[in-house]
Image (cartoon, rainbow, N blue to C red; front, side):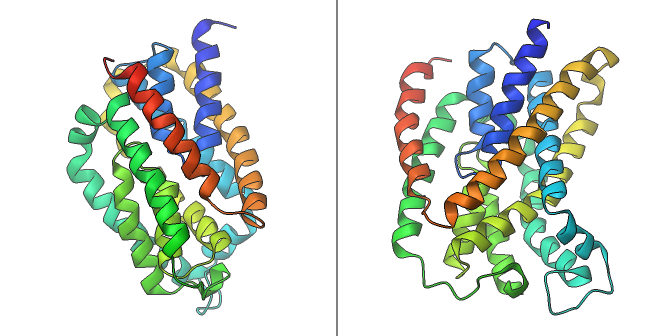
Length: 268
């Protein structure tokens, strides 16, 4: 296997394992890409593209629920059918709008190890604060999520435009502050990721189409498949963890690696 394919495997593992847990997949990909020498506009497009593997993992993992969302005649009182799709739209629109406006600034100024280190640290503190002060949950399944809760998660999701904050962390914290329990907040975060990441990925691929060629297909394809497999395992493991634990271990991990990344990579 060529070196480029090995790099794609490593990056796919990093993406899949970190996309749906609150540690920032983008932040980890930026650091991993820097260490592996995978930099430049094409590398950034690759990092965005392999998110599709993680997206597909959630769609397959929750295939029955996604089929219910696709059924527009489903019970309008549940997270299904037209109601469920519109609810995800309410969650997704804020981050799509801000992402469209700030895309170039974010890629130019925040896709670097030092901004990621700061975001990881701040996000770790935010997780600890949310675990300590979030209100008592009143929603314990996806069917109970309200329009207001969906909108609140959407506003929190905008914070994840800063690489290192973590889309999963932002949306789960938004869910906790909106009175979702941990498992429901995490599951809604998974579903909210699908439209947001799909739109961002397709838009980035369109903008970067002139950078890509047929020779990139093997590397991009390997990264996508590995990302799918790693994300499947991460989702299953994360849900099991939340059934008996809290988000604090992820906060401590972030607070541990943030200064390490800053110290060793501040000149990168």
